[in-house]
Length: 447
Image 1 (tube, rainbow, N blue to C red):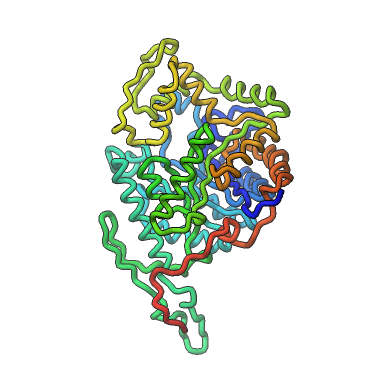
Image 2 (image 1 turned 120 degrees about the vertical axis):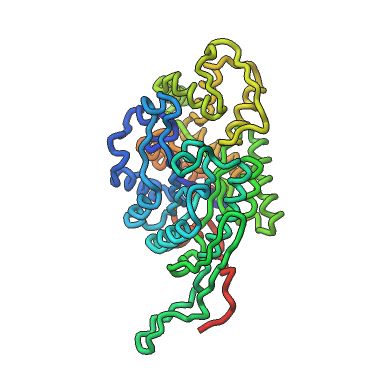
């Protein structure tokens, strides 16, 4: 069966050992190498061998020490994304390089310049995963007592994107002459001063780097709250989101993002919906479930409880673990991750849980256990039935899970005719089927 649409895959990395907070304990993990360039080089090159459109470096700007278990058991070391991706740009050829950058704890000029530089160093493969930051711990590292209110963060994020895009358009594509004989380096009428004045930013510009090879590096956005969806509909070219369990819910979420893009006057094909999926691959279903059991067994109850406390913004440590969990959810609360808060609220509404059963259920629901064939079935069903344009693969373990996916699942997807491992072009935009945007500031004057 041949398809015009090609399933898009991204290789996501948040915890350097894999998707879960204690994946670093799994067999084959290499925790002593989490700051070693060769570790990430292997990750990127394996994903490129599998035809992944991009690697996707998730990030946070703090050490999770809200609870002692965060230090005792969690990975709290990670490389800064731009530095890492700059290095990886030199040891890869086609795969995109997506850096997570917070709009709450950065300034637009810095981000525009860094992303433009990465786009040049990689010859058109840079991308930006926009986040608004969720935790007070991040605020404490940047001179604030608490994180900005959720709605304020997203208003700031929307303005941030507008400023960065305007800065990328500071120079016309043909503004630079490099004419040694006349001494003309650039055309003055090819330079544009942004002169932005808004609610959060006053930025004159222009940017001191030429317009990026992609025009604008590709913009990914993570967030499934109302504010997050609206920002994605207005600006995102790729949406990284949680994957609802039910196909119908996934279809509704997919359609909602596409609808919002249309409402903003955009082509809905210009926004790729890429839910996160974390496969646990086994030779048999029983083998995959045994590997999921291993992940659970290597995760101390204490850290699972503390993670739930973190996301519910309530210390649950004094509650009995084996009695029915009773919690008063506040729909106006959740200034951290609203989408995760709401997902726990919906889960608790499905049936009665003990506290222990709840956090273990949340852990297991993060993963998709199965054989290469059954996992490919799941991916194909969602791709072909209006629930996804592709997936961000959050590997359950690194490096083993990456090798398994590329060696065992990718050939199955290729065989089914929904995926190809060859790259369409040289830039990330080429490989995602996205057009190169025209400059918003160009006056139409040519040399």
